[in-house]
Length: 185
Image (cartoon, rainbow, N blue to C red):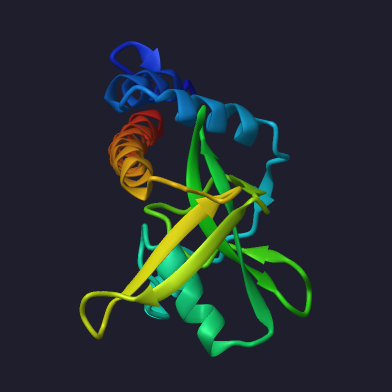
């Protein structure tokens, strides 16, 4: 069976083009950061089933808060901050290191299960947690080598990448199902 196509291109190629068109140009600081992050060793990350994670109260795109919540409940784990790779883009991400096995576990549900997530721990990143403006909120800030990460720029780019990737993923899944129906007929 052939690979799913979107506008005459492979789904992966199309997604890369869309992400590059919809992502703000990088500043000099962001370009330097991307080069440094690109040199970190990325490895596949273990991720439990997203439906199970959602049932346990974890939310999509809230990795830092999910990990903070988990770490306050279980003393035998640690938050590990680093980057996941979405094609050529790097997305700031937090995971849990199991204190017993040492295994890195992504406790944040994904929009769709399947495919490997590649993660690189970045020991240069420090996270600080404080009370937010409301009593029920938590504020999380990040620094890398003592320099605050502009989380708003990071977040805007991440949201665009995640949203467009989910749209493409859904479209590819629908096309694959359609191809299976046609092939089965």
